[in-house]
Image 1: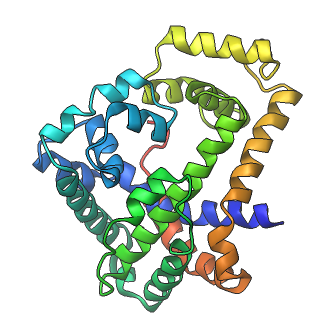
Image 2 (image 1 turned 90 degrees about the vertical axis):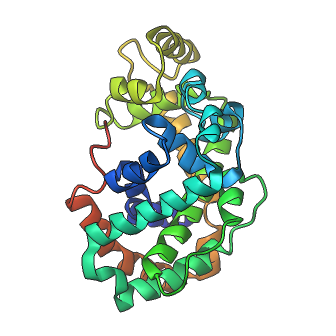
Length: 282
């Protein structure tokens, strides 16, 4: 039952954070600094950890091809500092949310949701959560900008869950590329494997070798579909992820969790319906 709550919270809250990865306003802000293309994504998300190496980004982002990461990191830090990128990212968030949500950014519901989400984010322990920890060390946006407070809180909660998800994948003995392939297979066509392969930068040889390993393990059939064993293994990963993400929601209690979902749902819906998540496959 608790894992169901964690999954519901994630599904409702994720669009509010995730829109930053598809935001033309954020892309413009990074470009002002001289940071373009994939470098904007890798640098803006990892900047909370400082001017880290390609190896650190590969480890914490998990499913990107190391050579794709290395094409941007660490060279990007010679173009813009982590502090500059973090400021550009927040400007992109502000501009994006003003465009996507309009007057709702100053509503009573936004202020209330920001307060509750901040309470949840502050309840997460740092242990074993590197991306969460990096973001937890950043200054909070001003309380007179509740749309930014909410975004920062949901970013913390998203990275907290993500860190736990990677731990679950590692415990399941899945590499980053194997995690992608099984994720696509679990989605049963909703996430085309070739799109995931392309956006994460994996060469065909690596992709086919990973598929062969999963087939030998008994997780994929000859057509690339999950077997019963693979489906059960992947579900264990998701269950573990949900269970390990429960700390902030237990701290809030069921009533405040329901309130937060109720208040954020219209914002997330507006973001999705206005195209704020772009084309998730592209």
